[in-house]
Image (cartoon, rainbow, N blue to C red; front, side, top):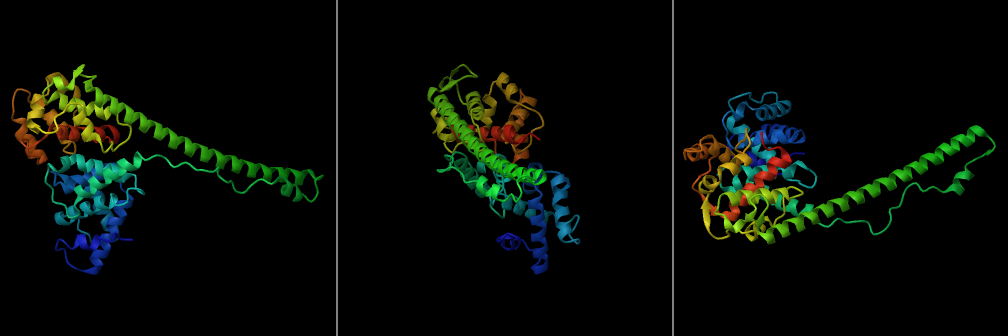
Length: 363
């Protein structure tokens, strides 16, 4: 079934109002959504962000193939705007049902990271950023909800009633019939044992998840209350914005059990000693990070999907110069002079860290 908003989204750009065209494009998008994986979502996001060479990427080719299955006349080239819109729609639909689609949370976290929670402007027909924020909030609360355990023991079907089972024997002295009878009883008992085992495993996994989340909560709360950095071996308040901004985000990410992290992370970062009022620019934060810590954080091959990590990498490439900021802004479409509260910049870095560690966002 095509998404209920597809026709409205598709009509925002004048590609023709043919019902047949709208129908085949909706079918192609549905095929793409069913076959998505994280790497393809990442590549489709490059299309929406109008990244260089995105139209030649594997994600673009994947989307073309899906659309050509629904409409063999779908253009191979020359329809860049349409392809970008369809990629936008595919990502929106993927996030539309987070309970049924485990990919929804990954895509939402990736979009929030790539757009730096709105620091990067992006034209999106489906308002991807708002959708992604909603999904991240819902997923975070859903993950941290107390598990619902059954109040009564499960009832197993079919029950093993040995009296009725023996009544099925017409000739108990017949060895062959007795063997068949024992096999039937054995199968019923095995089925019940399997059901009990599955129920016990489900309950155990729910309790283990809940215990891990309680550990996460306690670990983050003690860490925030102490305001002491294990990495820096000093109180966060003794450092200026820069190193402490990013190190605090890394230490918080290391204590996070499930992605997305808790909705309270911004308050925790402020509690640890980061300023919740004074604003600082992304450029100032990156320039203030010490060389040793910058090198310990940096990894190679980063993309615009994790812009602050990319900024560290570009700064490391030209450590004695401030020219990195202009090149970085041109590549990410984010103003390096943009000012945010220090705890908000730490939250952005925390978000990226989770994407890199949990989803392999380092492509």
